[in-house]
Image (cartoon, rainbow, N blue to C red; front, side, top):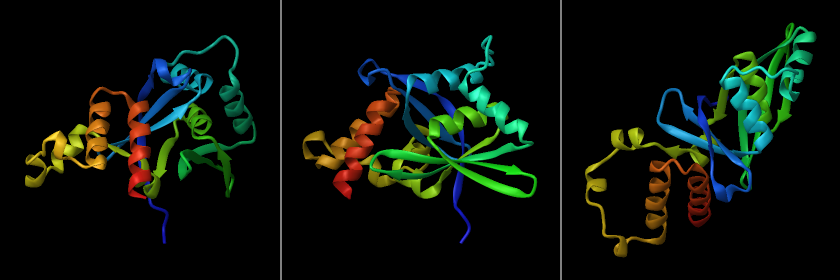
Length: 192
């Protein structure tokens, strides 16, 4: 069975005063409306932001060094695959070719993406990971709305999960992706 992967773009970086210095890297489907927030550290957020803004520091940063090392071995990053979500932690692989040899290296998604964007490489998420952790954007929700969703219940009548789903949508609407990720995890725990 072939690997089911979904191509993603970087939508942006977001932070919150309550995040303790962490950022949310927001990925969005190229051919769809789901978004995937990934909590990353300040250093990785800076490395991604500098590359996205085409700002070149006077000396190479760590991810620039990694790119230079990979290139010195006549290799090129083919793509990044976020392939697993376990206990709230995302896992990724850097996939590159050296001649006819395909090499996969385990990496944190933030580091893998910081290196991949320096190569202009694609970013993919395994379908099962996106199904589990993806957040539907307003555009996608509008397309998928049904007559049933038009009959919105009063908040007092909603179940705990339905209340959380409303809070999740509010967090997405206000682009508070860190809060959205926490609510999504809580919903998954309740459903699981």
